[in-house]
Image (cartoon, rainbow, N blue to C red; front, side, top):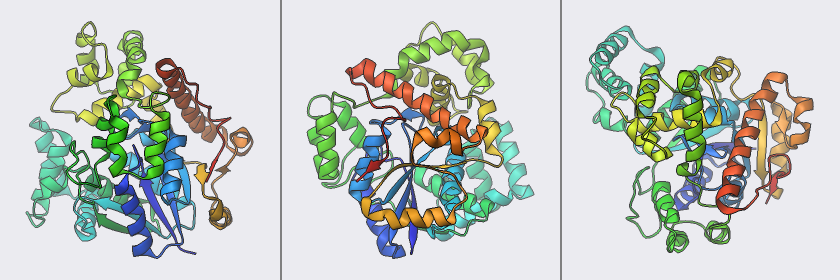
Length: 413
């Protein structure tokens, strides 16, 4: 039995993801696709446009065999942590042969060369990077220049390679594989047609998730606009659910954010990704910002990426603190495998995983307290609490009460 792992967000699911799955099956010859997916909040530091159970259904319809949830503590973290957690989860299943990811570069050899330097951090690289940071350069820019210096310009367009999200994640997947000593073999494919954050739909059959979200935010015909770019099932589900439980956007959490800002202004640095500089700026801005978008724009500074700022704000909203992160980051990461959904014909895959993994497998939430350690249960409850907040926001906006993590059950397709 050959099994391929994919790390995803499906925010929302579209034809590019279908291509990813098809290429994974073709290139690896796998029998099954296991998807590690973000839950109700994604790595860019925002809520997903539609809840995790709907996105699971879309993924299963599109060709996934099994969807597992990446815990929110890691799905909303930096690219390095997000990748480490996802690779850790897939590795611990004990039977995933390959991990396949899309990148803008599509060249595994170059990405591996970069990953090797970042893992080893040679002295010359470290010294150059420290000097760049002292000069006020942002971390991503300093790292790019240090790499270019250390590799003596041997990789063409290196800074541009390191500016694109899927290349960055691809490098982090490779770093994680090495650090974990994973037996999974990495493969990459060239990102299909569009760029990750491309706001425009330049092709008749594929658009980026960014472009699709913008279409869905448009109340006048947004659902009809996405039809050419996604599966019939996904388009139908958005049509049925539009104005009922989707679209969800970061600004829907603005009142919660404003309250937390006022209540926690003296303790912002306790929260994950909230650096002292961001805390100082927030204190000065407090009377003048009200929405999530206003806060994100006002806190913008060359020392922090927009995504980093989004993540800091989201962690404040969700109550995720740096101490929570430190508790799990060193060794544990994903301490269980939580099933969101699977295809009925993929039952042999579940049996194979159960034979090979040491992870507790959560197929029924009511059983979690009996099979998890207290530390693992605490990690799971972060997901439960963050999902309850997502449900509350959806109810406040649309008047629709979604099922909670205990009553939703596994999606069987």
